[in-house]
Length: 369
Ligand code: FE2
Image 1: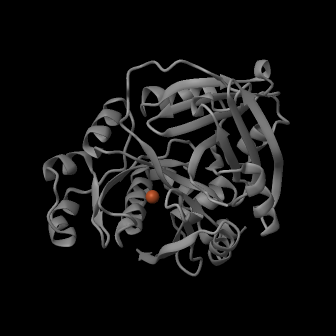
Image 2: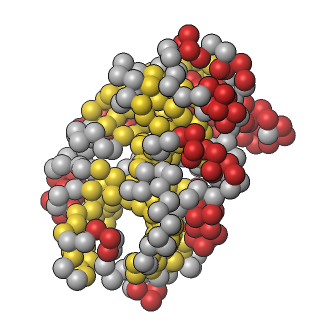
């Protein structure tokens, strides 16, 4: 089984048309197709968005009993499916189930003009599923018959080019088991591990990656022996494990952040003092520091090079999903300051939210209740 990359992701949302409007107008995606009862997708509306190599399906249940409606009632809007591109979805499904993955949806085939797509699903973390996708023929057809593709608008927007990684938060004590599951069942390797302690809070993280190098998951766990923080808040607001943020890669983060900010995307703030010691921490930065400071872009490095990153404020009112923009300048993994920077940036957002903090950062008693 060769997991080649992320074929697409699917978000279950309260209103696919409104979510699509945000991702289109603010984040630079474009509508590439849609499906619903008229294409055989009973009880749902699905809009396919694309930007660069990123494909994102937004799905809303049209009736209360649809799985997407049940997901949204429990979790709010969120990433429900991380679809993995494989050579042979039916064979990969059988292999993953044999290795211990929980089966969700057996293989089914979608056939179009000179195109065949096979999908099957196994459980991931919490209510997140992994959809295995194998394609023969024209990849633009997406799911022939089920999603009617739309001709590209042709404005060539490519501010964001690819999915860099997804961060998944799991309850305390579940990190090691989750890492083991991705290692033993999916064949992923552990490429980075870190424990971060900030302001009396603590969290553990492990990064797992497919052998192809094209699928990276950052697995996060709060340490409940410390003061509750944003991961505890996520687990409470999301009602369990799930995708905490979606990191999208750009080739020019300064241009991308400026464009998205001008369209109304709100980014987490970074104190100006962060930049004072920046070059001492990461070495010479090949970007205008004033622009980075103006936009709040963070800089880090690993053994191979630098990375530039920034986080949006939560895109959902439950504060359970946000975006990261990342530009890699040689860095292949994460800097030791990456997760700390994220943690501190999110803490600043929560603090700035004022009274919202009582909702976002519950007491330990509320979390344990
Ligand atoms: Fe990230």
